[in-house]
Length: 244
Ligand SMILES: C[S@@+](CC[C@H](N)C(=O)[O-])C[C@H]1O[C@@H](n2cnc3c(N)ncnc32)[C@H](O)[C@@H]1O
Image (cartoon, rainbow, N blue to C red; front, side, top):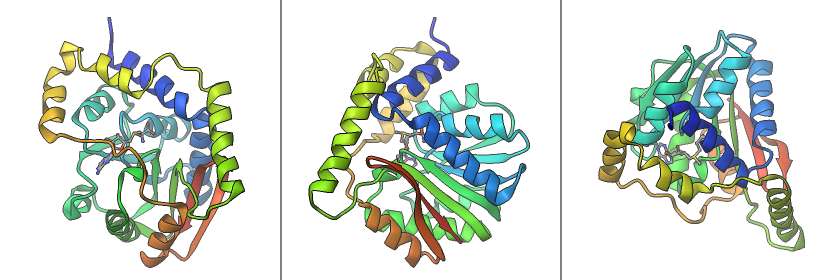
């Protein structure tokens, strides 16, 4: 019988189909949080989904305080049933300007996000990064792990995409993709209310990201972050970090 823990395991496997280096990226992000804030950081995880990354933070840094934000009722329900203590979940849509008022008061040491901010367009991204700057203490970290394509064109851009394809084909050997996972999870009667609420919200995934790495860098600088740089990258899979 499917359980929240087994759905989470299948979630991680389907994400690795697209992101064969997902665990390494998680490790890099926790390293960054720990390096900036030590063993007891206060962290916000934007668009946390079923809280895979929040769980990685809390496993390595059990004294951490993590706030996970998401707008998908199914993923929040799984996060609620599977995550260890130390995680607070907030149901909020990052596109709504009031989202930040739902977050427990700052300051925070770090705001992180994984494989999610490509869902936002540039105006929403600017609004989100500005709100994050206000949540963070001086010297606090924002770190976004996502597929970030450069807006440049040329052979190297094509080669970065080719690296993504080759690494996914070689290492991302999952049986279930995003669509198959969602089809399966919809049939779990335990999640019936959350699925109905998700349908009511009509929460959709844009096919292609509108935002390049340069759009993120510009939005972070406009939001007042003093330093912005890529600290890890494979193909287009990138950790973009900024200091407040
Ligand atoms: C591919 S999933 C990644 C989830 C998680 N961060 C991970 O790495 O497993 C993208 C997440 O972004 C969330 N999301 C997308 N747009 C959002 C928005 N406007 N507000 C809040 N969450 C959003 C989705 O609900 C989903 O959980």
